[in-house]
Image (cartoon, rainbow, N blue to C red; front, side):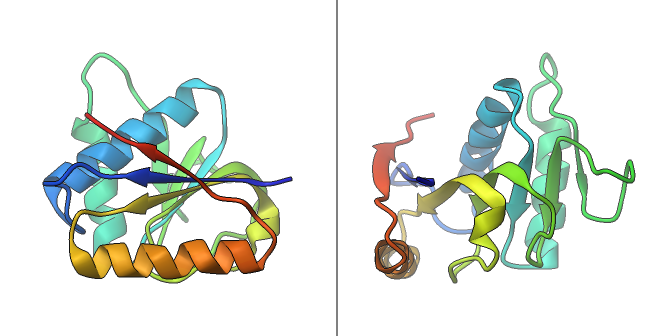
Length: 145
């Protein structure tokens, strides 16, 4: 069965904030260092570009091989960031979109987030319910960074 994990963000990690991007980078790095191929589905192109830039600056001592979709090697880097649904099988989907992602069958593990702001929380609740309707049992974890 597919795993779905919702990370509950710290109180100051609101949608689109630097704190939220840092938290997402930590989660991406964790999966990358577990040798997982990761697809990051952002809400917008500008969010994807901001996350791409944040990963370049993330941790000087530990590099996360990544690129935006369409850049880099033909088979894609271990971590690909896009704002449209992925088409390649990957172990992990890091989901930053307001709506549930299409093509969930491509992923073994879906990582989602509950931002601190009320609008973000409500969108996360709707995605949680959608995963449950699909027969998935989401787990929640706090993410303190």
